[in-house]
Image 1 (cartoon, rainbow, N blue to C red):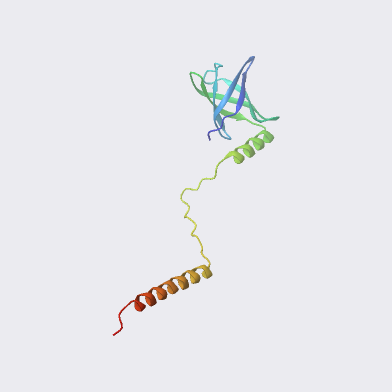
Image 2 (cartoon, rainbow, N blue to C red; image 1 turned 30 degrees about the horizontal axis):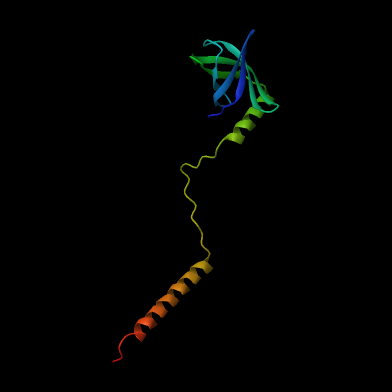
Length: 136
């Protein structure tokens, strides 16, 4: 899911700031100026908001290109998984694909009043046209 969050990647003594461009419960893609080659194991800290972080104990770089890195999460503590899952569920948009549209229900009273109104208009128009017609 497209999610932009500040992040920090750490591999040994090397650290780099990053920003997620895609995030899921199993991994993420980030933009960073740090150089992390595929196969590198990193720790990841995601900033979900003020004072709210998720710490990924171990992730591996699956791909890297220029300033982008794709990470697969390998070791995530249960509490960190819960926080990440709750965050993702809170920002996910409901998808309404393939569901039948809900039909608009109109109360029977409204239908009856509309029909009565049409009948009344028809009767008035009939009377007007008969009143203007020559007598036989």
